Image (cartoon, rainbow, N blue to C red; front, side, top):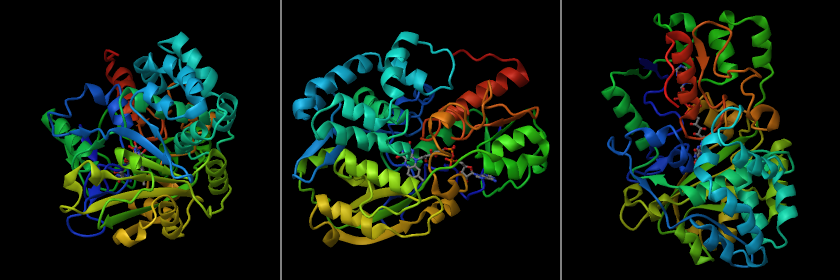
Length: 450
Ligand SMILES: Cc1cc2nc3c(=O)[nH]c(=O)nc-3n(C[C@H](O)[C@H](O)[C@H](O)COP(=O)(O)OP(=O)(O)OC[C@H]3O[C@@H](n4cnc5c(N)ncnc54)[C@H](O)[C@@H]3O)c2cc1C
């Protein structure tokens, strides 16, 4: 097996670098990894033996509010419910049945649409998951705390929260928090790629970096080619091999908003007004459900939100390898219109300052990537879209095109294995795993055990 990588190091979305100052290690793209911990595929690989150590902060997620308190997603449903005031029972009723079948649910959710392996569990999940995040939150909860927590998790969809099935993102991320946590790799997210490379090499695989493929005709002969690319790049590289009807379908593939990202070298930890935020690896900054929903609607509609919903990670509180002794790092991004070249770090910092007065005084240095720079760093993030394409109901399961086996193409031996295939964005390895199983079955007649 040969892996060809355009960049000078492999890893794609899982690479780390000293973006601000020597000694400060930042995750260039992905930073928090519930999907590594929950992936049925990655869980089977001996990644720990190859050096991957996942660190679990005491709480997966904190969500500060303007009254100076914070809502926490805790590892247990019960402890989370205890922080939700009058919505405690409603949260317990929603999450307890899902958490008790978490393994089955996560396994089914991270696969293409087909007959679920656990139909009853999936049917119960589907009733809530197919709703919009705002519809589910307003229907289930009375207070402000639970809807805010739920909206923050659902906003990872990069969709307006009024859209059908956005509740699925909130439910799956909360469920992952309860079932497997939201861990971070010691030494940076690149440790995930390092462990995979080490395992692949041990199995006899080869990797060639700094090798950009511009046409499929350049590739050495092989029975199967798997493209870790989104439809726009597939068209560019393999278009002439594909029939016109399939090409037209790929041309219709839709991409979503982008992200603008900031990394900070910090003189001290972020001074949260709600001290319990320091227990969490991830902090969501955006206040109420109404405010988060407005921010997501704006980015979707091509407007830069004045008060953007910000996803922040504070690795160095839990992993001392990320910064010099006594110093810290911060990682954050918000959603912006597709292809935006605007540096909105001021607005991102405004949101941090709102919940952590004095934050700006602790910034030693910052590094900013606009949505356009995110795409320049990795062409798979078209327009800065980090999910490999819109994940709305129409395109979530039928990505990249409606097809019984979405990883296959009409060209013999040619497969797509990027996040533009099910189950979509995130570091879980399931797109590649399911594409590889398809190729093994079709090209070699091998049916790998499930
Ligand atoms: C700012 C940011 C924050 C994120 N946060 C998280 C997070 O916290 N948790 C999480 O799970 N996910 C997160 N993600 C998303 C995650 O990184 C992606 O969903 C995931 O990496 C997609 O995997 P992939 O294999 O489809 O593509 P990639 O990981 O992008 O890999 C594609 C690879 O193909 C290479 N390539 C492209 N074109 C060519 C070519 N022509 N020839 C040769 N090689 C080529 C690229 O260089 C790249 O290495 C984040 C992404 C970003 C940008």
